[in-house]
Length: 137
Image (cartoon, rainbow, N blue to C red; front, side, top):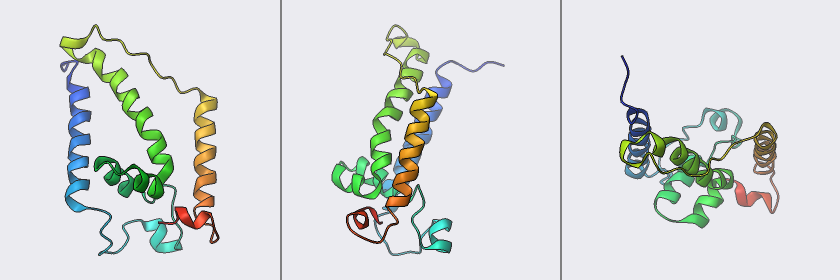
């Protein structure tokens, strides 16, 4: 059985909308409860993803400086992820199949470079002196 070509892009968009709605509804910037990050609870350090949900919340509400303060790597990656989704989804939608956006290909070297920068960011954000304490969430 084959699904309609638009099913997958619309399903991904629905999941994103549900996640965005959940983030907006719960307001992760309200620090009233315990941390939900197991790594931070056990080690006291920020993990590579710590601050990502808060950065997503601030991106959704249009506060780019606060989003970057909470997770600059996620803010950097967001436009690339949106572009990659659009180049994948638009050709699968029936009415706009003729739209062809330039594709964005991640080479192994580019992906390796991004992961190295992310690892350096993970280490730097846990250093206890200025200017690195700016990234502590």
